[in-house]
Image (tube, rainbow, N blue to C red; front, side, top):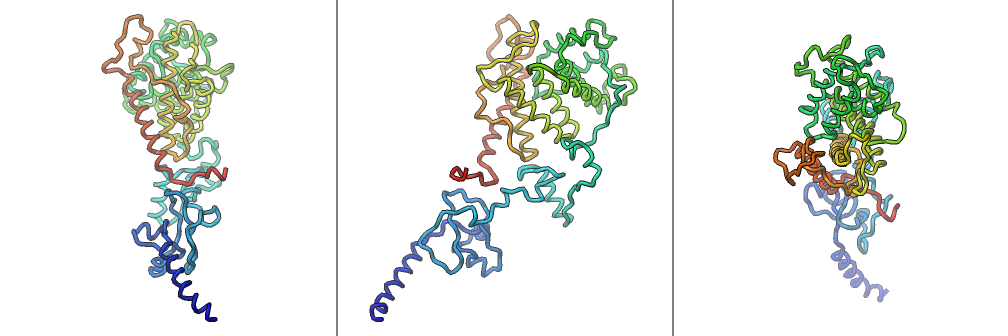
Length: 416
């Protein structure tokens, strides 16, 4: 008893020194938000005095996170955290407010923000159940704007004069930063498809691949979608088709052609599907556009367009190799830009990773100078390709910034 009595002051002194050596490396969520000194246990003293819920759900990025000890216990130091000791972060699992229309929307998505705002304003959680009328459509278009279904009898080609007017309108207005086509090559395709008679439908449909015909139809569809400007002459309108449904007519014809495409993929296969994604985004069908964009990226990578040592082969002898090379670079970096925006809009992972790409930017030259034998300047002023290249550079900056703003805890390497 005497020895225990003599050791008692020393043990008390050792415990006090241990308490002094104990450094709190992680504060609870409430103390961190209020910038208060936290005791590091659960519940901490501040939360007990303030009658607050003490939690440690905010991600910790300063080394190994310490496990908060229960109140009243003094440990010899922080321990490394385990998966079962702390509840998972709320941002790492899709809660109901991040599921809009039955599909996941990440925390960065504007849909999640609006969904949370609507729920907080109305005080209710309105969800789209399986009994709604929208559930009878395709799973790839769930939540999109309903598009009119054009009867098969009205799916008809326009004449040469209409196609010429719509294609010129496309290059003038419809693709300021997504220029994936070469205007001279498109003109050769139209000559091959229609001939010289401007009032007749296509006469050489068997000689032109389906992907090329789909590109021409998608250019007409995108151009016709600007009908709100009311500057399209009546003689360029389709017969028996309402003015607001002409663009959908061209799109459905192109979609049927792409579904029937056979053989090995080509550069034109990627270009045609990329145009369908742009059209779907312009007609408020974001989910369908995202699902269409996946095969587009897969075809792009299957052709090796993301690598510098590969080169797309021209579709026919009239297409120069330099034109095919520049169009390959264009469709790659336009897809990279569009992938970044779709990822931000929907809050979903990217499909194209920057570390997998070593292809150069497209040359800053206009279409008429790509296949020209004349010496062209190294830097051309007022070039139409300035906007797409600058757009791609901005998307790379945005992609790099997103890596530093991850809102969830990825799986640790030792847990893989």
